[in-house]
Image (cartoon, rainbow, N blue to C red; front, side, top):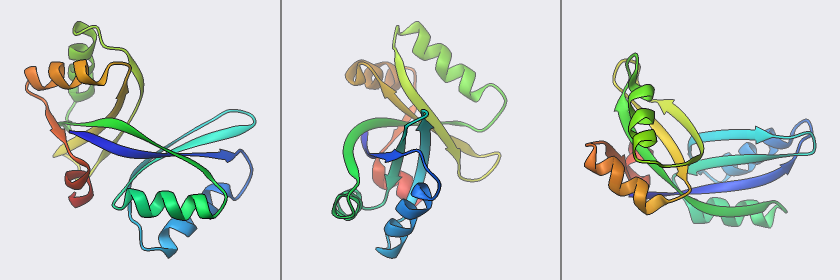
Length: 143
């Protein structure tokens, strides 16, 4: 249930994010989720897309430094406390969250939380034992 995520390193300057998304769009690759983290000098753009290899190749051929990492996509109820509940389960399992981001497909249905854990295998086991639904990359792209 691991999901492949693209990480793109980019200079922290005006227009870079627009450039990347335009390059991807021109090749008909659909972005399903994203997160941007930045410092004064550079940023990390994390993307879940419908064609990981194509996006990686396109971005590399345009001079971007690109990596692929695995993350977990956890479906939770889109309601007050949905995030708190899953984070409590993660805390009780002794898991360390390296980073996370989220998206909602339709309000009042389910939200999807994207997690990168220090120990991915332990996270998969713990979350499944707690009854959380882990989504595949294909399932995310079909939302």
